[in-house]
Amino acid sequence: MSVVIETTLGDITVDLYLIERPRACLNFLKLCKFKYYNFNLFHTISRGFIAQTGDPTGTRTKGESIFGVISGPSKRYFAAETEPRIKHTRAGLISFVGSEDNMIGSQFFVTLGADLTYLDPKHCVFGEIVEGLDILESINEVICDKDDRPYQDVRITHTVVLDDPYPDPDGFRAPSRSPSPSAERLAGGRIAPDEEIDETSGRSAQEVAEMQAEREAKARATILEMVGDIPDADMAPPENVLFVCKLNPVTSDDDLEIIFSRFGKIKSCEVIRDRKSGDSLQYAFIEFEEQKACEDAYFKMGNVLIDDRRIHVDFSQSVSKVKWLGKGRGVRHYDEKGNRSKLANQDIGNGNYTVKNRSDRDQVDRKERRRSRSPLRHRQDRSPIHDSNRRTKSRRKSRSPHRNRKRSVSSDSDTYENERRKRNMSPRRDKRYYSSSQRRRSRSRSRTNARHDNGRSSKTSSSRSYRSPKRESRKSTKDHK
Image (cartoon, rainbow, N blue to C red; front, side, top):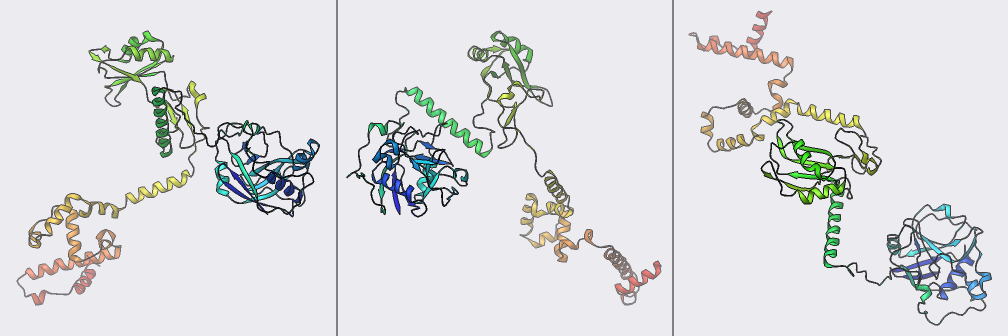
């Protein structure tokens, strides 16, 4: 059994639990057939909780069952069914609003969240939404005040009963057409669903421009907060700090404090200087105790001559004394000495900023440092492939092989690369990666080759002086022993 509920946001189709809740379904069907819910206001919308309606006046206190509509106020409520028990376990369930003594009338709500089983003892579930869950999400996103009352009205415009298996009670007469909305039913609303909201009405052109500029600034600040450039979109610099620039390098803190102290008491005056040399960077920050003194100095000290320089004055946009504790963790205010300032009551967030998995991060850092000290990595960095200047030289060499053969190599890395290409060996066959036994055999071969070259240069015949490297290496080993 289904009922279509047409709302200002869209249509919702409801299936009723006729077998489990026959009396509650009879009450709901006859009220829909009587057009009792037409133009009823969703007077309570709690995001992720419920959306409640069924009060023709929209005051949250009225409404009566179909038996009260027919027989009078004495039968305004009736007892709800509790068996079998149906729990509020998911979004999209429809339930009658019950009282302390388990009595129900015409008001009902739709669940907007899951796991609401604590509503089971008092409220009676009698159906569920099978079509229009996207409309339910739109209802869930409606903007409401602190009392969960929507700013713009969400109403039931019409109800359609697709099939009614129950006979009409005695004295029930269904209207021939949908009645027109009465002033009583429309009295509880705020902004009509079809009403166009014009925020510029009654405002001057300057006020409209300021409002638009404020919205654009808010949007930009929100974007910067989302990407992590600023800690909070609502953060603003202090209004009692003045920024002074275009100063003479000889102007000191005491000079500025004496000049600006006539506008009010100064808490701090600091000329920003270079950390290494200590020279003035020709701008300063002056903090007043009162905002009015800062405003007076702003209006009167602009373009004033100080030490043969015309200074520029503006309100400070710096938030350097605000420490960001991490994205989503808030900020804290500190003074010049690093202590918590008097603006601690303006802190945002609880400030519980702890570095998680510090040991894992240190381990990763150690791996990175070990990788950076690897000889293979350094050798790759010295390779001509990774050097832009040597890449150019390598391209020049490739044009003329004969020129490369005659040209001397200018660096150790080039020598290494040329030798490696001649021998067609991999980088792992470099001397630095030989084992101890390989080094001994290499030294033995080098001695053998040296003796062989000396023998060829002597006056004796080459056939008598020639010996294989293996024999010579064995002989040299015996001589060594």
